[in-house]
Amino acid sequence: MIRRKPVTDKLDEESRAVDLSAVDSRAVPSASQEAAQSTIKQSAVDSRPVDSHAVPSASQEAAQSTIKQSADFSQSAQSDQQQSEPETPPDIRISEGSFKQIRDESLVLLSQGITHRIDRSEEGPFQIFVEPDKRRAAQFQIRLYHRENPPRDENPPLPLKFTFQPLWVLAVPIICTLLDFSGTFNQMNSAGIADASKIMRGEWWRTITAMTLHGDERHLAGNLVSGFLALSLLHYRIPLAKLVPFLAVASAVANFFVALTVQTNFRSLGYSSFVFAVIGCLAVIEFRLMPRETHGMLRRFAPLCGAASLAVFLGLGENADILGHLYGFIAGLLCGFIPKKKTLRWGAPTGIADISGVFAYYILFAIGWTLAL
Image 1 (cartoon, rainbow, N blue to C red):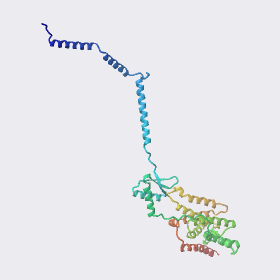
Image 2: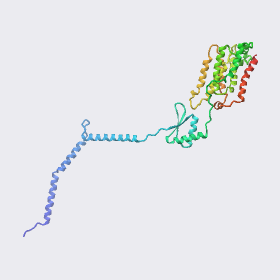
Image 3: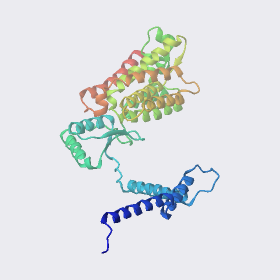
Image 4: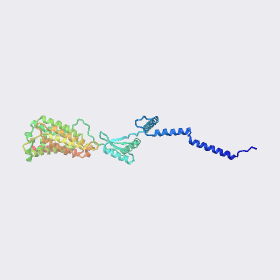
């Protein structure tokens, strides 16, 4: 009879075999474990600090090249993005003019909620700029405003052309001087010349009659030419009848101040004091009409500086009555403030007062010669 091993013995043998294999595995490392350990050591060696002079490894070079490529890509992406962004269109100019005009138009646009900006060009005029999408609305509102409030036409100077207007003013010195040269009236020159000592003794009419006398033909021609040009320029701004009587009185006052300043046997004659009064008056008128918002302060004084330079150029000379020229110019400056600025800018119709101004001019010299003779 054969005896069999129990099943438990077989299990005990298998368990012991498993224990022996576990012991062997702890004692002798496997090939996979050795490979893993070598990899760990190699990575530890690579992780140690490297000398700055050492040659970089292939992995570092690859990493650096990758970083550079990513940086270049990001820069190119940003540049592409910037190029793809649409540029803001510049503002459009819709109006240009004086400060008052631009101010009114700006108030119109503000009332309608249209954003804009005001700038000044290099040439001087003010300008209004708006965004392109608001151009039509802004222009419509400005046109509507000007349609409801039409600008009043200013009084521009007449075109520079030959005119006979100064002749009625110059007729007085022409006639009186020719009568003096012809000898029609005896002692006309001595009776009408401006003698400072006699004027201070009460012969005030000499301040009037002296303007109608001249020393010779050259003296007369010079005053007539310069007077004709000055009166023609003044006529382009305002009718002569509105100012000539005041200029004549101012010239007589200037001759009186010459006598008051000298108070000796100083004698003078000629129409030049009246001519310089016209130059001074015209300079003040141009100064008053100069738009202050379009030009600077120095530009506004240009007419006064030009007139002063012209007065110096014409007033200095041999045997020239310098004081008479100076006082006449100052008197003319004051006469430039007589007409209203509204009249100068917008004009005024010629009326009976203007005609009476012509007669007043003639009557002034008639009274002077009547007392002199």
